[in-house]
Image 1 (cartoon, rainbow, N blue to C red):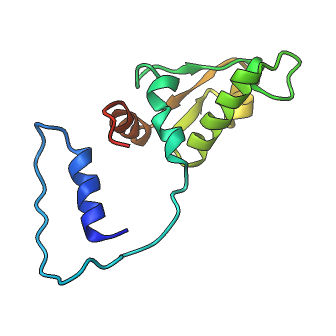
Image 2 (image 1 turned 180 degrees about the vertical axis):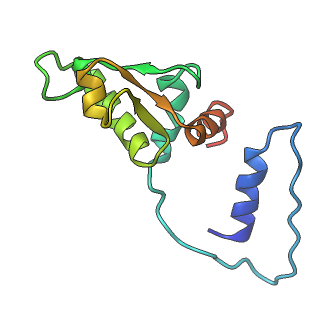
Length: 128
C-alpha cells in the first residue's frame, strides 16, 4: 500500500458532492508504506448489494443455510459462507443470536453494521 493508493481509496470513497481530498507530495519515487493481504476477498465485498438489496434491511436466515441441517440447501450454504466471512471482519452481525449458526438455526437473520453499510455503498457504486 502506498500513499497514492490511500489517496485513491479516500477519493473513491467520497461521493460527488462530498469534500475532495488533495494529494501533494515532494518525492522522486513512490514508496510502499505497507504490504499486506486484505482480511476478506474483494469478490465477497462485491457481493454485498446482491446479499443485501437494501443496506438497512436484514438478510433472513433459516436452517437451510446451515450445512449440518437436514434441510440444507447448497446455494444457501455457500451464501452463508460469504456471510460468515463478512461477520468475521465485522461488516455484519447476526440478529437475535450470538453466532451466525444460531441465527440460521433459529431462523432470525443478519444485518450490516455501519461499516458494512459503508462498504455496501462502495460496492453498489462499483468502487470495489
